Image (tube, rainbow, N blue to C red; front, side, top):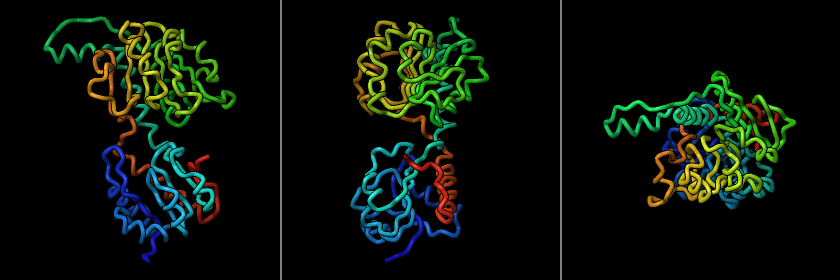
Length: 315
């Protein structure tokens, strides 16, 4: 059996190869043996000896066979899809990719918000048609932006909104924790906040509480010139209700990086709305993805040696 320190599962994210991830870790951690695990034979040979395995999914049987495993470094921000009971039974710690997506996801939100504020969607349509015609725009300055979810991504969004002279409202499960928004409220207060929200940004995890959070009732409480931006999960928004609101001009528009269903079928009615910007779950993409993951793992290699709490430890 070949002995290795870090096994990189051959799992592609945002079109970026795991081989590149392996090379990044190998260059960062010269004292560690880093191998890419791609074939069934490599799974059988390499996983049992690996001290750290990194990727976005693994089954419970593979965890049971990895008898030397101390850490599974998930390359996703969420870990609920993993066999957490198997990790616990085998005394394996789990970390996530929280923080890796912050800058790029926040920039996507800002781009979407500014596009609607300045009417760039309208300008792009005119440009495609070869039409020169002045049109009315708005300013982001003085607007109210409500951000649901104040984790690393939500916090990064609010940080980047600060220079634009907007009022920010952060919505989180535990408002007593505070945050970098001008106002922080609990998720149960969202209905009261919606009537004064110009841009509703969804950056929360999908939970029982957030599933279908933006439904018909919520959309009716938003002003008709407001915009919904979703980089959370598609199921946070009631798709049929959003389609109806866009169809009847109850919303200025929507920017959706995630949809329900996903991928969005070619014949889905959301594609028909000129004021609905849809991107293919792309907010998480950044050329710095693997470098940021390597930062987390490199720090945790040292922490494993000293028994310190791990960075990004999943709860």
